[in-house]
Amino acid sequence: MHFLYHIGRYFVLMRRAFSRPEKLKVYVKQFFFEVNNIGISSLGLITIISFFIGGVITIQAAFSFTSPLVPLYAVGFTARESMILEFSPTIISLILVGKVGGNIASEIGSMRISEQIDALEIMGVNSASFLIMPKVLAGVFINPFLIAISMFLGMLGGYVMGVATGACSSYQYIFGLQSFFIPWKLGYAFFKTAVFAAIMTSIAAYQGYYTEGGALEIGRSSTKAVVYASILILLANFFITQIFFVT
Image (tube, rainbow, N blue to C red; front, top):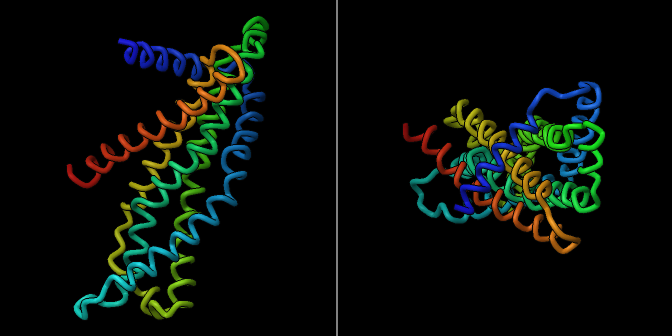
């Protein structure tokens, strides 16, 4: 029953968060602030991880394909499929949960225990809408761009490291990247990226908004936000994959 209580309270909070804003200009300004805070500040982390993981996938694939029946262009094909279908949308989202989700939960949690949220309510401001809606919309907007950059850098890293280590030639890798490409897989990747962003930001905001106690509880709220959002992202990944690939 405690689980159902949290589900109900979450949807009530999201209903408040997405009610009509009082002053649109303020929300637009906050939206762009959150785009920078959530997305642009994460570019460095995404760049490093994607580039090196793409290289590792390429090298592992090249030295795993020992059969003469498997052409070497399969290395580029494997790198592309791995980055587009799973690594960039799912693994990068899980990494961002730890950075972005924890930050959102601690930020809103600090405002709750310092009574800043109560002050907003006293002034007649819809605190849920002002604090949560720009974060969720900014995450859904910017995350697909981050994932597109991750895909590109992963395949670039595979090219650089694959050619540099002699795992494959430049021609073989590029030919593999271009082979048997199915465009709707990009739509699948970007769709689930947007869903993951909504889960990550809204769950973190929920945990922070209902923080009670002191500084110790802020840390607990951040931990809960990361854990619960990660689990929900994995579940959503399973169901979205079932819908796109099975039905």
